[in-house]
Length: 351
Ligand SMILES: Nc1ncnc2c1ncn2[C@@H]1O[C@H](COP(=O)(O)OP(=O)(O)OP(=O)(O)O)[C@@H](O)[C@H]1O
Ligand SMILES: [Mg+2]
Image 1 (spheres, rainbow, N blue to C red):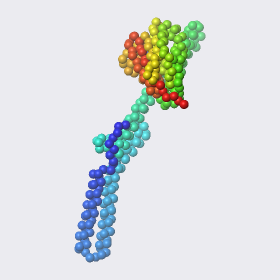
Image 2 (image 1 turned 90 degrees about the vertical axis):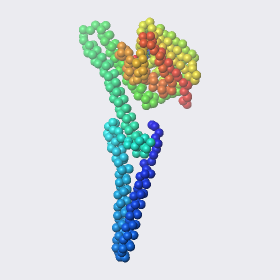
Image 3 (image 1 turned 135 degrees about the horizontal axis):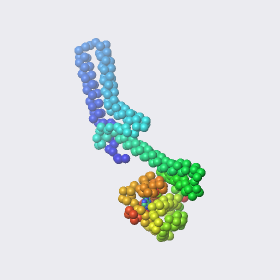
Image 4 (image 1 turned 180 degrees about the horizontal axis):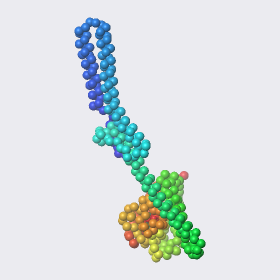
């Protein structure tokens, strides 16, 4: 939030006008009193006149104060109450019009501006929530309709065993996609609320990375892709759980988007106070427009692979890297391949 000149709602012009009005009324009262006292000797009449003067004076002062309060306090407070009631009832489009210019802001203007900012932030998160729900619903519906139609097909008694195998494989893939979606949403949600306990420990990063890569060797081999690894020996204070999320997603993407006879290279190099992991592939590559959006939730650039996954992998990676204070960048050329570079820094070790 920007710093504003904090002017007080107590205005000098207002105070001076109030003072002049009171002084003027007093002066008139003294003049009237002086005029009467010079023309009468009746003490009772003078006493009654003084009483009347006091009453009139008090009424004038009270009226002036009520008007002043109405204009300077009640009006803005009423507008603020109306706006907060609208916002509280879910109307995040409600905004307060600020009449003063920025350099003349008083406390009420600052409250109004803060309320406007609050309402616009709430409306932004409302849009994000609605988008998120519609994305999730869409991602759930697709595999569910696959499950429904293939489960119906499997009820046909005339199917041979080959067809049955094929259909149940499709059913398995769809249910795996659903369970991956739920797992990723839960992980992302926890990461956004920082609820995943991060354990920063001194680990042998080379061993951790190697173990993860070995887990993918069979899939890479079965797909007819060549794998090349180039690892420095690195010890780093970091979270092995987060490193796993990063590598699993980058590697599974490299495999998914690279065809037979392609090549994937994983390199791990030491850097000043950290490490650099590079995962490159000779796959389909990413065009410029897609590249700008790949870290968004549910964004999938390559429609031919949209059935595999939900577009949450890189959003998770980005979130994890942001929490760790690392960096991620991508270089890619359409139809030639992509290279993701991750910079990890030494963290402070947990006790
Ligand atoms: N190595 C890569 N080669 C080409 N395109 C890629 C690569 N990695 C990511 N992309 C592009 O970025 C998009 C987003 O990637 P992300 O990992 O977030 O989603 P996904 O892999 O489609 O689904 P999920 O990760 O949820 O299984 C992909 O759909 C694809 O278009
Ligand atoms: Mg992915």
